[in-house]
Image (spheres, rainbow, N blue to C red):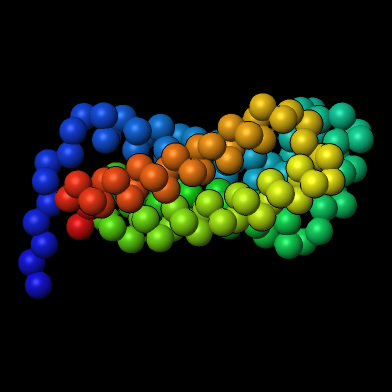
Length: 138
C-alpha cells in the first residue's frame, strides 16, 4: 500500500518544533519532580512541595503519560507520521485527568499556566488532525 503526502508548509515545521520544545519542558518538569531535584525544590514553596508529594499515584501517572506521549507525538509530527495523532489524543486525555484533579482540589498554583496547558493540549490534537487531513502525515 502506497501513501502519498503533500509537502508540509514551513509553519507546520515551526509548530511541530514548538510542540517538541513544549513537551520537552514537560518531560523535564516531570523528571525533576520524580527525582525531587534541588532545582525542583527551589522552584516551589514548602506547601506546594507537600501538595505534590501527596498527589495520588494516578495523578502522577497521568502527568507522566501526558508529557511523554506528547513528546513522542511531537517527534511523530516531525517525522510526519500519522500515529502521532493517537499519541496526541492520549496526551490530551492524560492532561484532562491531571488538570481536572488539580483544578477540582484547588491545587493550581497558577491558573493561567493550568489553562495554558489544557489549551495547548487541545491545540496539538487539532493541529495533528488537520495535518493528517491535509496529507502532511503518512
